[in-house]
Length: 434
Image (cartoon, rainbow, N blue to C red; front, side, top):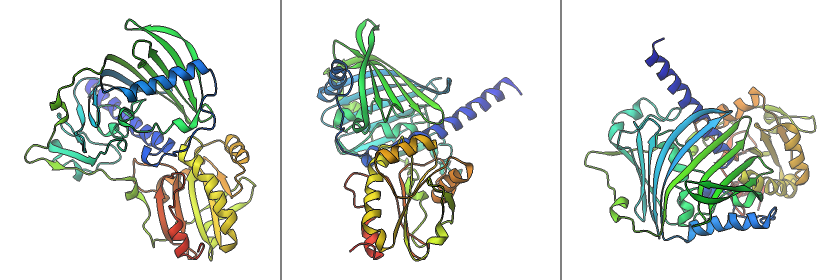
């Protein structure tokens, strides 16, 4: 194999790994719009002084009138680097933003611009292929395409869009949209914050704090500069079946300085076409279609077969521990089962990602008693990744299906938000609720 072929093969492997990890991170927590909005029951747990530094960092980010910075971005799994890029960020109140990312070799560039009302995404060096999502047909005319989304202040998430830039970047550790009022979706699941030292970064004296989430399945370390209370280094570790680490180094941080207005003005040149990515919803099974049959072993050792539930309404939920909305939804599903089981409702949970012991401990601690299977076998993963969601390269949890008494899909959706009425209208239509 020639050196150039070997290099291309290596780049292809890295792109595939990156796509797989983007999907894995999406599974961890769906986009912020569907993240749980409940207050943490232990927000100050740990070192009070460290927690004050941590909260001060968010206050400084949200309180600035303008913010400019440059950052390196590196992510890796099991010690192997799978993406490297740099980005420049410009943020202005009330609702202007520009993030320009460049690949580690400088060859590929992607830009996100928010002009106050809309988010524009474009690629000055040509839109890259998005492995696992794009088809060959989608690439036709790809050199002159753009994307557009509504972007009201406090509702958009710049961080959730960066993986389409094609520069080797996934979501930044701190979503830039927090500056514009977006709630950090991880905040309700904070376990505690502790100090781990003092260091100097680029001449700035920094207090280092470690924030831990979701029973330490995720951690974020911040080197917070004493001068402006903003971080200079950031490291996030996510512990899945493999360990995913992101590292950032903020440089040239400037707060409340003037930023040129023309950075936030962009319109597609003549002849450019709008490109629309497939969405998670595109991979859902349509209403009226037969629900794929399956058999799983429940935590109590009994077997659950979908086709044996004819005459009943089944609410099927795919979930995992490291998913904040899942932890909000499961108690809700338990209440539905208790109240409406006598009316023919059967709630079944399928965890295809976690070891049996921690999942069982969580269910017991939360007094969740509806039937659950915890099984990471290839057959159960195949049930989720191929049969109940069909969009290759995209996945998230919780994934919910309501299956009617004849075994057909009645409703399907991703995500859960506390107090949500998702699925309730369908249960009423099927006679489960009045």
